[in-house]
Length: 362
Image (cartoon, rainbow, N blue to C red; front, side, top):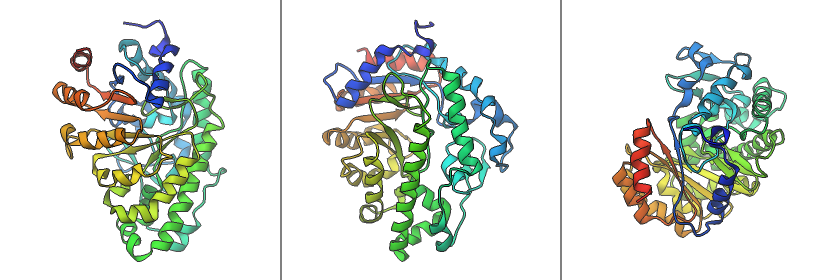
């Protein structure tokens, strides 16, 4: 059923986001549903012209070709009555590689997504990498943001795209295997490179936010449909799944603290594979919010409960993203505090929405 506001973006929903960030007393968590899966690549017309192992250049990215598909995906908000505001970012997270591309990494097409090719640069070349606003990929990213802002015309929010964090960029520039050896064989150079990459991440994020208007006075992240009252950044350190807590604290934690301190509402995206480092991430008070995926292939929902509880015990807002079964959702509702809790459910159809909603409305 079509709602009174386009894409379901009722401004009254902003109050629930404010309560989420403040961890105010609420009767139930913030809840959002989305039919857009983990890899939205297939939803976009331009991607259908690309072939696996093809390399994408900035000249092949015409923002105008993506705009209609972007708005079409927002229409799920007209069908689903939930708590979230829907918006867009460059390529709607189907293409989360603008930053490595701007740093000179070739971009390769995979069956369901795209990926920055690892470069295996020498230390001399890796430490020489800089973020240049005049490079074609950087300009394409900013042009994309400008086109989205013009298309949105205030009807929905626009955000930065999901981007690789310093450890992921380190792995791309030096090579994934080489970057792990670097932790032991070249810790000082590793620390220098990670710090450089952290600063470039901050500049890249700030650069796009200089062009994006605020939405009802706040900022927004499109991947998680997350509105925030102040400046926002999404931190990603997927490569740390192979780090020990000691190495993370020594080499990466200072960088993540620096990034988080540059924004009012920094949040970190984590997989279940990184739970060995959760305590170390929680030590960074500047990380205001934690987003953690439910991933049955590694740790199913019941096994994730202690980690979710640890985030809440530290007084941080928590986003749980995934597709729990109704029984798993009952378990999560019983185990977790609704204050500062946001469930983002990835669903395939309205039947799944109805089944999960029945549990939420118990």
